[in-house]
Length: 272
Image (cartoon, rainbow, N blue to C red):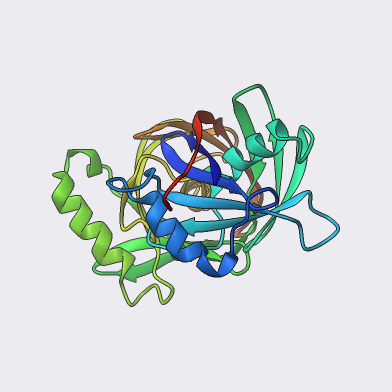
């Protein structure tokens, strides 16, 4: 079974083209757990399967599985990587339309490694939701929505990692978020510039970057009046991502995520 290993700002993925490879979707969850294992597999935050589009308005379909085998609605950095994969493997042109579980996503090639996607518009926005004694913003991107809790915590990068992980896990499973939530800790560091880290649902740990997390962060901050929403830089442990959106009257739309992509290697599995 042939695969590609890619990452976007450190958020890493195994990519398999099911149009060419014989992959049963009924076994995709097990395959994700096996391939994403960093000890006995290839190692990744998630598995992305490319499949034929179900509708006429898309070039192809993206199925995203977290490393724990759960089906994810969508992945921002994954979608940027898959846009590059789609372009370089002849599935689509420089501008493309990608089906995801959360809805249609558009992708655009900016340069050889730089890709931009339009994220799904927020379907739920709650700027003040109390969870575990914290005042969080709660955003869902798409429908069904990708749940994100955003907590402004200016000292998060000085908190011991184990302590921050404990808080992230506690918030991720908080009853305040019935679907569970990805949890982003955010620090404002300048005009339209923030530093953040995300504890991801499905990975159950911090990741080096989270694309939908960036979109949710900037949505929350823009609606709170803390950033403009135009080319906001989000510095995550794996690199810098940029978000531009339109916001008005308590809503946001046209959320664009731009950042780097990398093809780490390509290979073939033998005993999986």
